[in-house]
Length: 477
Image 1 (cartoon, rainbow, N blue to C red):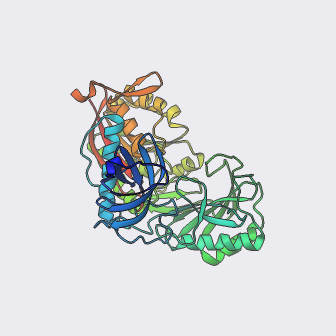
Image 2 (image 1 turned 90 degrees about the vertical axis):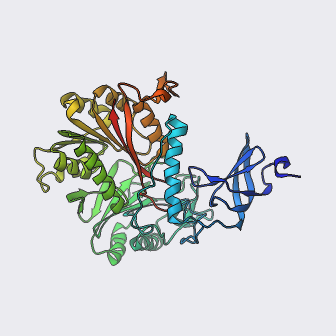
């Protein structure tokens, strides 16, 4: 029986050739009319795989054996690779990772927005491992009721126990060690999603120039024997703060609204792109400092080239990019919904001598941006939007289109929502009621009154993972 004649069913085992890679880094294998997605494989590899799920000619598979390894395949550094869901690409040479991520951005624009354009190779990270300045790790219980600290397995909330993670620096291992000892010695239980029992839900740590902002996220009001935890952390770190965040919700959000400082300074000072900044437990900072510097400098250069007299930094976090824009353009507004982050942005104005040049507004972008736009002179304004993974609010996109701002820079960590938002700004996607549809007239050229894409550049903020940061520079037609 030939491959085209094989009956493709769940739990069947097959042999096939990986023809390309999907947006999540999984290998694509055709078996007759069925397309299989097989994670942790590489283009050109002959693989033996098991069909885990088959529906409507789409299958999901597990690679059982790599019969013919590709040249791009390397030995993963982490022994938990394929088990932990944090990384998807450790089996690929770094150059192949960069090519895949650029292809992911190109494919998203074409498939989602109908925009077909070349995307250059992603800007590399200087460090392929140990690059993260933030640790966010769940805490729970295993099937035997024992405490477990680790990362979620792919597409699940099953926690894979982790002690050492190669994409985090050495200090992450020390954090896990301190919390493990604390939970054991003080009888503190990990959180159970099944029945809501237990205390500790997540551990979140931000490193700022050798200082550590540690947050214990709890499902209860009390963090038992916090003095013991402080002592254990003090054995590992010279300079740290300990916060408790109370999250009693049952959703996927990590933080609740209630932050309590248990020990140390409320904020720590750092420096980035020549800007002195402050950060607290809920202040957004890019996780890869080297790539952040390259990205922000590119954004500022585009703003300066635009000839703008004022910049608006939407979703501005702790204000680093706002300050850089204020310094290079002359005047900048930052809009940020998280009050702590906005307060940190306020705190960097005076030390960086930006009085009268940098202005921070605390509120939702969709509410505050129209107000700022009404005060600014559109033709003199440069706008930056750096939204969360869900993308830019639809009302905000409409406000941008109606503003007349000549140049916009969009920073996105999600190619899918980036393609959707760029599609709306360029006119490649049109609204029909609550739905978005491809504009049949877009192929004939950029639309008057919309934006055209001047340049697009991926930045590899997250080596070894499927995620990619992308800068899209747009100009109004």
